[in-house]
Image 1 (cartoon, rainbow, N blue to C red):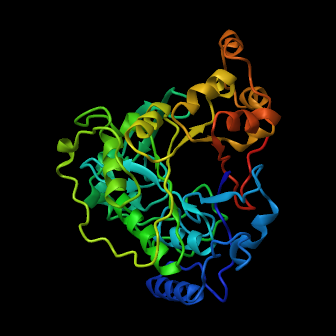
Image 2 (image 1 turned 90 degrees about the vertical axis):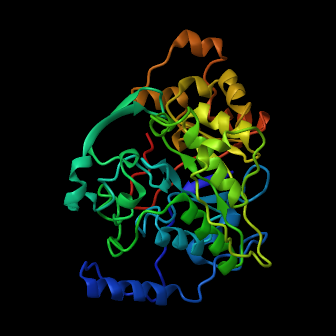
Image 3 (image 1 turned 45 degrees about the vertical axis):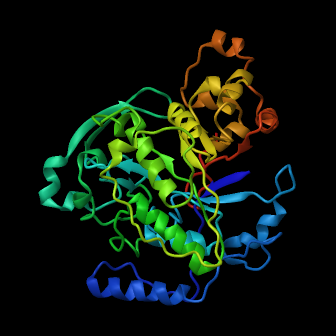
Amino acid sequence: MFLKAPLLVAVAGSTVAANTTTAAAAATTAAFKSSVAGLQPPPLSADRSGSSIGGAKQRGRWLTLSGDMPRLVGHRGEKSFMPEHTLGSYWQAALEGVDYIEPDLGLTKDGHLVVNHNEFLGQNTDVASIPELAYLKTNKTWVDDTDGKPLTVTDEWFISDMTLEQIKRLRVNQAAEYPWRPQHFNGYFGILTFEEYLQTVRNLTIDLGRPFGVIPELKSPSLYNRDRPYARYFEDRAILTLEHYGWANITKWINRDQHSDLSLSPDLRPLGNAALGPSAWQSFDLDCARYLSQHTDVPVVALVERLPWAFTPNGLDRISEFASILSPWKDLFVAGPQAFFQANNVTWDSDEIKSMGGFVAPQDLAQRAHERGMELSPYTFYDSRQDMGYL
């Protein structure tokens, strides 16, 4: 079982103040570097008893049905402490002992894969403060991955409209909707490319002496494949990059000729005695997930939340054709599909659900998934100040 969670720990000995001046920025950065010096993540052992950082020592108390420990996914890194999807967030997650470090992928106007949760940048960067980028503020509609319906976002700066050069001017802040999260590191980090993320995880593996898994989520393919040379351009760009860094083998022909401009670093830091961790793909877009499964040897996580048909026996059959891991919103294991969809105003065709075997009861969902060869990855287990979102 995989558990998606931001992890929150106090950094030993750090005394940082929320101050945005340049002097305070330097002092805060120095305090952080000093506080983490010498820290090591929990070792890969049977019970992870080698460290109590981030509570990993306690994980052995919560075994899966197979008797193994759950694997932890650092959701956007350590977003409850650091601005999400930044170097600080990824390093903090590693120090807390996660098994996988998660990036969300988008694609710039000029074809660069970058890491950001939203398809837009106004909520977690300083883009609004840069006058030269004001003309890019616009409205956009695309197909929402979670339910297949049109989604419109207004008055925003979209990754797909910006070049990498423009995006590299931005600084990342804690997302505006979470004002209780520490604001100490706002402005210190920029937006990473997918390649920079993979280099970071490789470096963490070498420097901290244990493997970390990569688990990229491809966001909104219907948006990022718009006005591209062909229909799965976004997916192939990600596949080629993951292959270059040793986390994927390509198993089916893809159009490499259309990616001759993809410039990846020829110099990879030697692993030495280290070994790369595992890899997995993620997507809410199940057509995208199927494509990734067909074209690489990397396991695929099917993210499913607002698709009622998916929580029927026939629906699970369909998903298991391409997914190794089923990742539903956590409350579907507790409240069950019918109650969850009713509470969230998600409608379904009763005749269709009946013809597909009816909704699977919440207490049976894990067993039904396992019968079809799928592991489970419920999401997201938030830090203590964020509403867990249960019914």
